[in-house]
Amino acid sequence: MGKKPVMIMGCTSDAGKSFLVTALCRHFSNQGISVAPFKAQNMSNNAAVTSEGLEMGRAQYLQALAARTAPQARMNPVLLKPSADTCSQVIVMGRYDPTITALPWNGRKERLWPIVCDALRGLLADYEQVVIEGAGSPAEINLRQGDIVNMSIARECDADVYLASDIDRGGSFAHLLGTWMCLEPEEQALVKGFVLNRFRGDPALLGNAMEWLQDRTGVPTVAIVPLIPHALPEEDTLHHRAQPIVGHVNLALIAYPYASNLDEFDPLIYEHGVSVVPIRDFARLDAYDAILLPGSKNTAASLRSLRENGLAVEVALSAERGTPIVGVCGGMQLLGHRIHDPNHLEAGDIEGLGLLDVTTTLELDKTTRQRQVLWVHGGTVEGYEIHHGRTRTGPRVQAHLEEGLGWEQGNIRGVYLHGLFENTGYRDSFLRSLGWQGRAEDWRARIDSEIDRVATLIATSGWGQKIDAAGQ
Image (cartoon, rainbow, N blue to C red; front, side, top):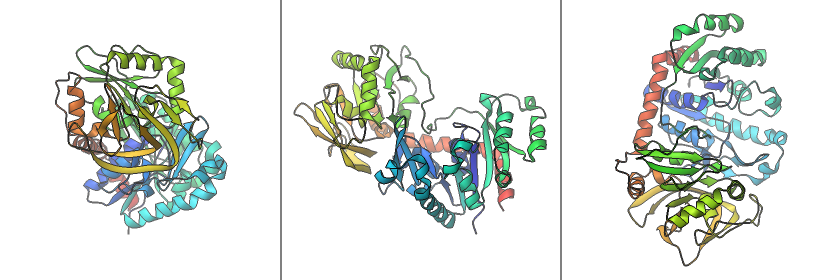
């Protein structure tokens, strides 16, 4: 018989839920327990592809790796990928579902709830321990009617809920008390403990605040998790702030609206002697050694933003100067002559920057698959595809990756393969071509080591033992 599900909820978005679930998955795995992550519904443009060619949130993909189990779409049965302020593409069990995408928000629960429950029941049957992640906050009472990810899930599987607050923001005890008070009595009974996440400083400064909180709720504070630097990817944001540094290789990462899969540039961000600078608004780009254009969930909207804020001109000037420019997926498409959108999947037809001799048409069928292909200047590289685009090439481009996955034209290159910079040889060659003198390390090995490191926080806090005692 499996253990009771453990569920991590947060007082706010970005309270560190994904981080805590990742750490818990490795903690349980280290004890020899078969464990799986689960998040019923995720909203993020950072997506991964399973070995079966199914999409899932990058956070749950990482959590599966932390659990030392194969990433599966049922670990994230519903993925919302924002493509406009009020529109998201709905991925159901790893596949784009246009019918559910077209439904209003409040009309989706009836269709999605049975799918979510079936996925959860399957994991509970197949694994000894399931660690569940909530979304946003369970105190968002305006969303309660359509909830399929927070307390509805906890009640469905009678999970032991742990409510986390980001104490580094301040106001944690008010957040915890207020969130708990917004719950129904039967939901309050599921909350087994509070977690103070991202704590720094002297725990003695907390005084009797935890006793004060328990007196009012009956719920103990079971863990104080310290704030530590780490290289694990963010779920759907780009938190790091950097500036060009003299003596470093400086890379401009153009963070336009609807940019996707930004975590694939983490291997560059964490290399010594490399500075990756997110560019969100107009800036001169002449101080950079290379420019990176990420994927986009709405390439036309991203391109329009570049034109409106003046960055399109800066990218073109950089191309004229001979600065290397790398576009990935949507970033590659917008470097071309034109993007055709006959099915109105994004924001309509648009002229590209004209820096790469390619033209793209967005088609209804979506390509999602893991790939191993030859890089024409080296060996085999690994990655994954996620795109609606079908790209035709002109005579001025040459292959950069085989099998129609990448092209180059002078100092401009564009690829469909996400995860390219996770390949040590490719990353090393790219940086050395810019004058870098460092030594590239195995990124996958580093991430696994980072997961082990954050898992020790669970053991040293004593939280793991309390979960074991509560869930027997």
